[in-house]
Image (tube, rainbow, N blue to C red; front, side, top):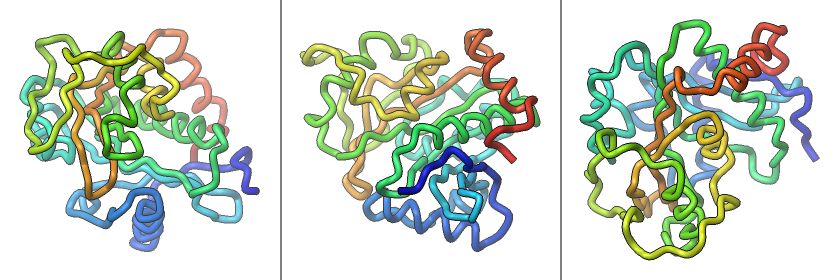
Length: 240
């Protein structure tokens, strides 16, 4: 069993790093492959000390809201309400872990690295598509009900549907909310102020259902922000 207690995060430095990340994505998401966004993005790699790749995620830097239309998320959502966002934005996507490895330390290591990203370039917002495994909405109804209950964007920031196949869960009957089905990375966003779209996109190619997610860095509760930045300033315990 591989444990992540001594893992470290780093940014990709070579074509081989990108190829390793894409290969891991192929194991995690059915039909995933390298696309045009990889050419503009950096991969965040979480590795063991011997170099085993445990997890990865893609970071696409955007100067400000005027570049959101060129993001991966904008191929699925009408993100016009975010075009006036000021300051640097990072789109986070394709988070995945080595099959069979579910150590929660992996996500902690990744979040420490993301905090370092905020400190290094003044990132104002994280955006991305948060995926549920399995494209059938029926698999995720209690979790979607939990999103609807507490975490939807206000009306003036709600993205409009743009994808040909969506599941609008904002106003239909749903079972009792159950947050246990919310994916771990999305739970992390929500715990520190993240919000989501009121509709999900059905992606049969990757066999996922995803919601647009944004986290305004200024909205992170001060005590949570201190914990994230302390991990970086303390020597990185996980980020390098």
